[in-house]
Length: 356
Length: 250
Image 1 (cartoon, chains in turn yellow, orange):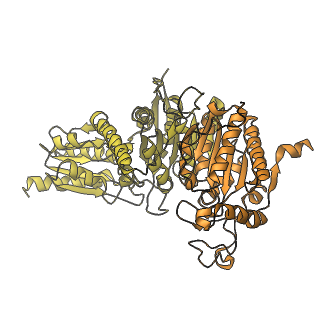
Image 2: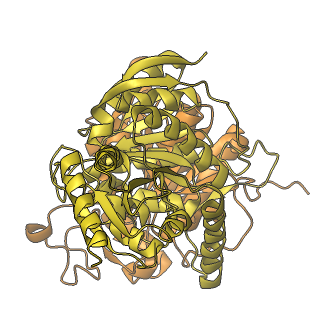
Image 3: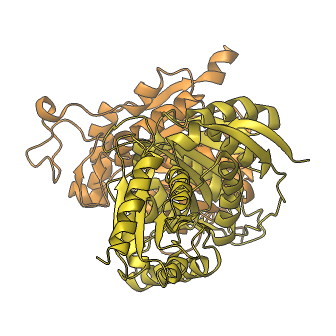
């Protein structure tokens, strides 16, 4: 039975992962996501699962590789600097077509940065982050409820497409408490005939590997992978629109930025400004077509993000630069206030009305 | 006529890419013989590493995953924790295990992870063409120590068995060699014992096999064996460095 409970975002991720069959968690402590590890450390031994605190982020992601190779649902979580350390392993996972969930509860950077919320790992997440041609399927939750729901969806999509999936949250999402409805998993299980479980002397040995010294073979592997990516782009794009239908000014933002933007849009509407909010839920694949469709009527876009302007490039690419896109952002752990976003909306509206 | 020796079933009948006289052929066979004799082929999962033995996944007739450089024990940990009834081994060289993968080696040993590590020490990076390894001997000439390994500048070789023997985690650590029939037979016994310990859930075992690299040492296979016997074994003494269960029996 589904029940509504008050939870921290980080805990909601952990509980949702358990609910959909994840019994293996490998991680390393880093703020602001450590509650996930703490929750797993408490729960996993009681349900016959594995919680293992690795000696490093590098070891943790490689343990994930091992467990994913063995065919089980497995996850790791970290925050920005830790995700950089996992980059090599994530590239191997992409190259080996291994499904798993990787959670990044982002903090300010670069370097050791800070421990307050940020969205400045957008490029790293949506472009792959490690070496080689690959994508992660990237989901961006904007509430504790979505922290739970997208965790489950992340596992399902990872298994369906044999792709590592990233839940890209931020320190706010991880630390805030909200009521969450924990739904029972549908328990849909994907067959994994490729998994390493031992041949049982009944089949040819399975090999999980990203190495080929034969260029035409390696090219074929890449092309096959990108055909799968094309399927994902066709089937799995997700986004939310709020008051966009008649909007002149559309804010685009994900996660905490979208929530701030939504408040600003409400305030703008109260002033008679036709503002709307567009929230990508999948960052890769980015909702390009939906945003392009909005460009047919909207006059200006504002990219609201906790970075120096990363997603803004995807917004411009999506609308093919047919409308002006401005940036409204704070960095270093700062979050724009609704008033700051409202000011950006007013400025855009004034340009439109002024016919500039 | 009775067939008294044949290729182990756990070793696939394909041409290997190893150089003539390379120790990997012998060591692969010893691992496969251990798997055969314990009847565990169907439930064994191997982890190949980065280095000359990267293609081990093409040779062992068991499920295999290829790990990033140095990460094989972490990958093996994940495989083992997912399916504890599988028998899981890594096959790693000295650069992989004792340089870039030192942390994974030490911590999988410290955890007493129930896996078997086959560590091939030939004192050089083979795949990349003969650079200095963490186990290259003092004075040893390699591509990146062209005047001989200068310990005052780059320090001393890492003695893996001695180092790990200080930990409480490992169940069984032994150093063996393949320089003679006697040594090869002893190496085979050690490898089999390591796998046996895993089947008995006794925990982490590592067998360090002193090997050769005729190509990058610039020697004939025969001379390489002699050099290994005379120089490697002197620096890396053979023997059991830890056997938790032998100690318990005493």
